[in-house]
Amino acid sequence: MSQIIRRLGVAPRLRGSASGATCPDIFELADGNFAVIGTDATDSLEAQLPADAARADYERIVVITRDTLVKAKADIPDA
Image (cartoon, rainbow, N blue to C red; front, top):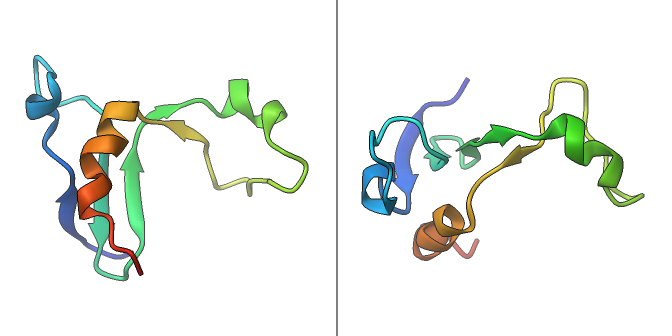
C-alpha cells in the first residue's frame, strides 16, 4: 500500500471542525493516487449510480463536504 505524502486543502480544524479529528479529508499518495476520508454512503447511493458506473466489492462510495473539495481544489494537480 502506498504512503500519504500530503493533505490536499486545509486541515479539518481550519474548515470549522470543533475537534479537528473526525472530518472529511483528501490526501495525495506516493503512487500518485488519492485517499479520501468520508462518510460511507454506499447503501444509499449505489442504486443511483448511472448505468455506465459500477463499484467492485472492495470499493465504497464515500461522501465528502463541498467545502472539503473546494478548499482542496488549488492543491489538485492538473495532470
